[in-house]
Length: 87
Image 1 (cartoon, rainbow, N blue to C red):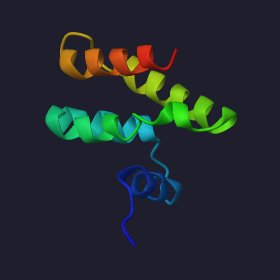
Image 2 (image 1 turned 180 degrees about the vertical axis):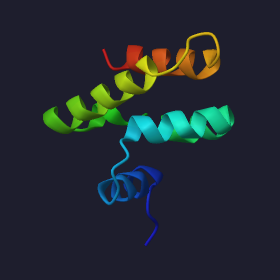
Image 3 (image 1 turned 90 degrees about the horizontal axis):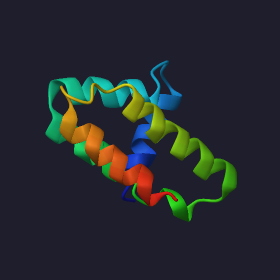
Image 4 (image 1 turned 135 degrees about the horizontal axis):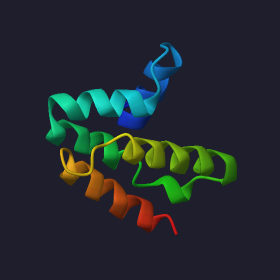
């Protein structure tokens, strides 16, 4: 059975004390290109129902708020485009 990246992340986070935003920030600090896979996992957010969708949107918003708009400009802008698509 093939597991999605998002399922793997959710299961890993459930067994640790790290938040999805913290994981994203750590990956982004080491290698911004690697963080794009993390962003892509949220591309289908609007297909989820109410409360799940709200949590996913909140997580993406937190991920963006934790970035430096200049030092991590590419990730910051990519998350901005993703957030815009949620409307």
